Image (cartoon, rainbow, N blue to C red; front, top):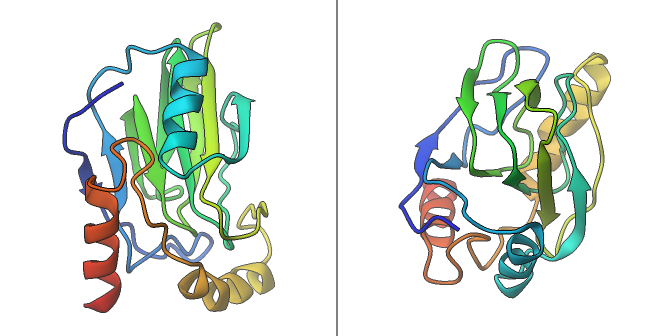
Length: 170
């Protein structure tokens, strides 16, 4: 899996998807040269083994307001829009999405296989940005989602703990 430092992006609330104004999305651009089981092991070894799954990425805008998420492309390729409808599209290798970050698959290869996982604290939920009341509730839950102790890709010494604590304290 990649060892390159991730690129960071902050996305503004677009009125439907709150995104996360305090914590940046981490986009790992390096190639992921690992099997699905190797990615799962890496995520687990780095404290992101909660609720692991193998599948794709939903083709509709959605976000999780009560948990952070990581995605690793194990096979194929995907073009993913981050930040909601006004966000930015990426060809992903691996990404860490702070709670509230909108994401959707715009396109992907037929053989696409994504490994997803969550840190040990938080509760999985799926929000689609269709109900203003859900968004309003998300704005209160997102800042309360616990910060993980480890970067799912690069471990305890990876950039996530420092970046997210620094950004939340700012």
